[in-house]
Image (cartoon, rainbow, N blue to C red; front, side):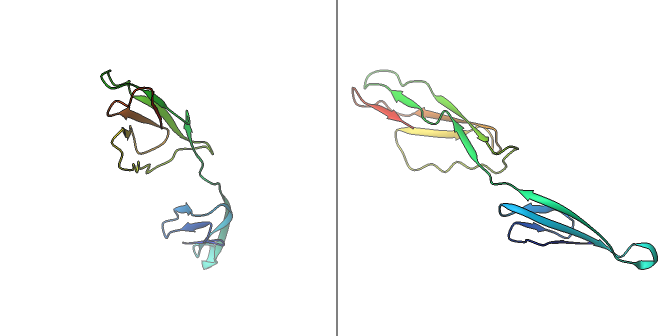
Amino acid sequence: VTFSSNQPSLATINAAGVATGVGTGNATIVVQSTQGRNGATVSSTATLRVVPLTIGVSPTALTFETEIGQPLPPAQTATVTNTSGGPIGALQLVTPIDTLLTASLNTTTAPATLTIRPTQPLAPGSSLTA
């Protein structure tokens, strides 16, 4: 059995028949076998629709307010989802070096919860939006 894609820039397929979307659009996957009657080659096709991945975060902003000498405000959370549908694997949080906030994800797949925590109080009258 052999597998092929007519659009390898959109979808690749390995020798085991596992297809991977690498672009957006439609690709035709062809399966060929020489196991047909009298050794004839038998082909079958399937169309694979690859949709773009769209990550959504809700709410889109979190605001923290505190003053020096006051307790830090509690952590806040946002939900990370694939707004184009389905699960997302291999989420990774890349945070800039920041001494005011820390961030963490509860899982490496979406839907996930992003937690933001302030690490130190702000100057009086100021706020921080993440």
